[in-house]
Length: 332
Image 1 (cartoon, helix red, strand yellow):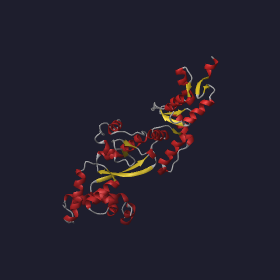
Image 2 (tube, rainbow, N blue to C red):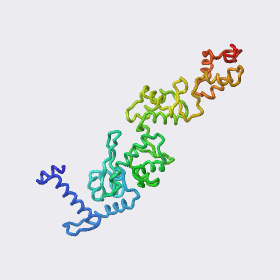
Image 3 (tube, rainbow, N blue to C red):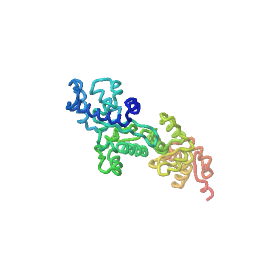
Image 4 (cartoon, rainbow, N blue to C red):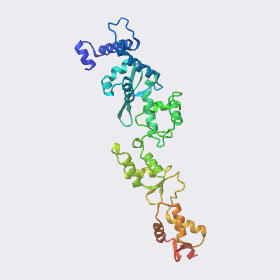
């Protein structure tokens, strides 16, 4: 029954029902946890109180001050040695008896409710927990490589000075339902929940370690965010890649894209690279040597394709069997 329904049955307001409920919970808490029966017309058997007292002591001694709801109730079920299914119907009562309070969390960006957070009633952390969890979520969603504990603590302390240290920031992170902790200790946002398409493309290329065609990038992005039933648009991806010149460069006109941090990948056209070595040597060269030079700088292109492109460009000319030079040399 709701507070209003109970109030209607007792001919009092729903607010008065809430007040009576709070008073009764306080009475029960004193009796169970402190064995304080002063003025109370009842007494609980010791075997009833002892498991709850032991549980309260365990929670008070824990270094963790805040828990996700599923996490706490798994811990309660373990301590009381009962199935978690038996704990669930008594959720609110157990929270109140243990002197805890809940905080509803909502993902403002994705418009969805998150798992509740539970912590000590009256604890200063509970008043700001939703803000900090939301901040962590937004920070990681905008940084594909994630943060280590020092970087994340520095980011959080800009808004909450001295509240988050490298040693305690993990306590905040574990409250975020969509955060992963890597073996090297970095905190990252799951791929599907990264904020931008270009961040996802950056990770795909970084993990591939080589240039990829934009269609391959889009296909991999779609595959990795299948849990959200979303596909990467080819047109949108091309626009994003072109706009983000600080991270992405096209490899000539091949449709391939590379990361700007990859200095070992040449983005020039095949013929431009062939002309480069001919100009440097100032003499006709065997095709195998030219192709080898080009292939070292454009490993994404097949050797027979290199030879075909050389034959189609008027700036290059055959000077002998399998030997190439520059057209301008003949004119000179």
